[in-house]
Amino acid sequence: MNEDGSQGLLDFDSGHTHGFDNWRQQREERLQMVRGEWGVPVGRRVRLKLREFNQEFTGILMLVEEPLKIDRRLPLLLRIRNIPFTQADIEHCSTLD
Image (cartoon, rainbow, N blue to C red; front, side, top):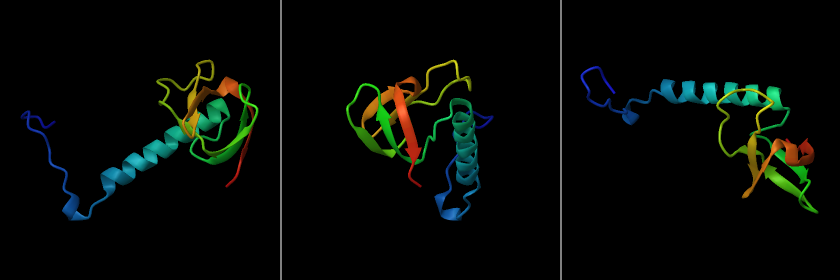
């Protein structure tokens, strides 16, 4: 929102990607912080075993929602495929890429 209350325009035709590139960089920095704090390879292709299941799962380890604070004492909501879980539910995990 601009100072005069009007909404700015997104200029997709200009070819400038600075805003998107900045967003991607900030997103990657945030994922690095999450990886470091919780010790899980979020955003990477993994094979993992969950305590509640009798099988291993392969896929991209994703955040269900970004944590409000980077603090390993808080639960981290994750998913692989369409299966939600927390980091405490992981029995073992290895990266595939």
